[in-house]
Image 1 (cartoon, helix red, strand yellow):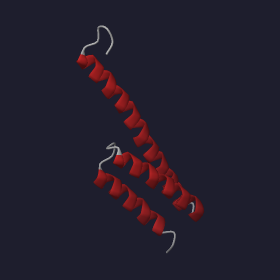
Image 2 (cartoon, one colour):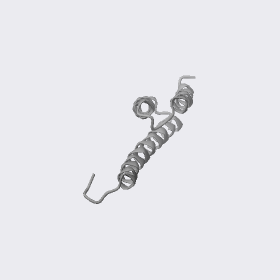
Image 3 (cartoon, rainbow, N blue to C red):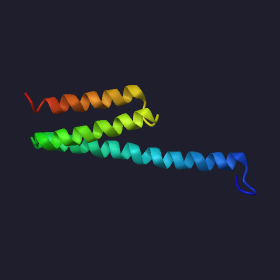
Image 4 (cartoon, helix red, strand yellow):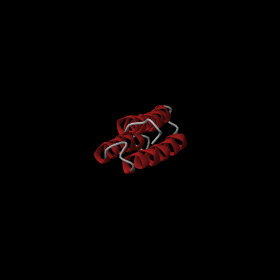
Length: 89
């Protein structure tokens, strides 16, 4: 801690850092999801598959760090996988 820094001030700074980091990760997940949806709507299977893999990787990382809850991560992955599977039909 700094010279005149209380533990509450330190805790506030730490939580602010985490909030910004978590916001960036969640935003990245949403961006990846939009890429998957756009590729599926454009009937581009290769791009959709690449975007889906990237999204799943980001979601799994976020879930392991507690940024996204485990069941929420599973739900998001499942929905995107179902959307991707519509290209195969």
